[in-house]
Image (cartoon, rainbow, N blue to C red; front, top):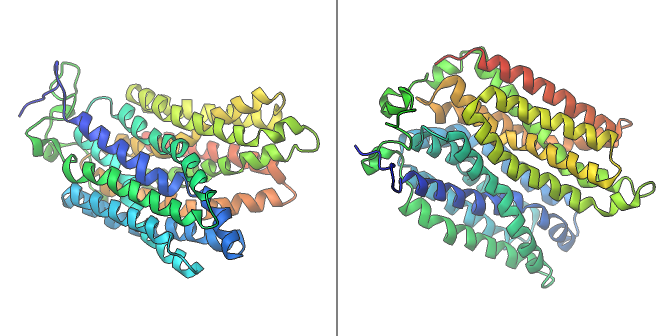
Length: 419
């Protein structure tokens, strides 16, 4: 086999491009752009916003229920078939939303979207990067996952403009998004993606180099690690499951940063007027944070944990205690975006570090179930906290507690490596 990397193009770069297409198109269009439809669709049908957004909870629940099956399929079947099938479900689910005339219709489409998104958002990037790279794994995972946010930055304004073009512009926007997801992603999943380097007669990116580890030069059959059955019997597995769920709960605070800024309408109107900028600062922190976290994790997973959580703690402290001047609030929101990024970057890298790559997809799919379940209830939880006498201070205290739990569980899991 050839390493095909010294002084030339390695096919792993094509795999990275495919992962970027997946995260920037179907993942961003379904998840990062969902919010622009909440108000116009609910107002069109004259129903409470919660009645429509219930489809998003159904989407997350379906992701949770189908993740083990998706992980099993990705570990056994041709990755092209699994990811292409998932992309088709995502695209058709978006197009299906455009034909909705009743809330149950949207709930069915939400279920379809959930089945399609399970392998795309949680498993595609870490599975492909782990299979194709033994060097710069963290950087590539972070780079690819950053495009869920970048895709949101690109397509949210486009979708909003289409929605505002007419009384049923939301139908057109859903159809356009569905077609973009299909046309932009299927060429990659069908014709570029390969399950493993051996399918192209290659070694993984970084294998055979002087600084590569012994594991780097091993074939997949010799890859270090334990099976999912063994992993699920260890305390480290449950520690990482808790980490995954709690970091997802902490991440959801992002959805309320604009509301937090708006709460200063009477005392600091300039901050209230910049509520959208605050949310954008956090999104920028998320996108940049994913790449930076990936680079740091390539040096040290433990350092990645301290960096991500440290940024989160500092960010929350700035937003809570120093919301004025506005620049301090924006810096705090940006730093919080870094800990937000840990959800999809630190979690898979922790799983790989603790349990190895031998049965990575099956192990990570089961741990991700906890995060997917938390996604379905986290927004409701924080809404209750904010609407209680605790208010936004209660939310920020909860964030500190979440990050403390994440620090303890992640360091414990790293100390219990079972490879």
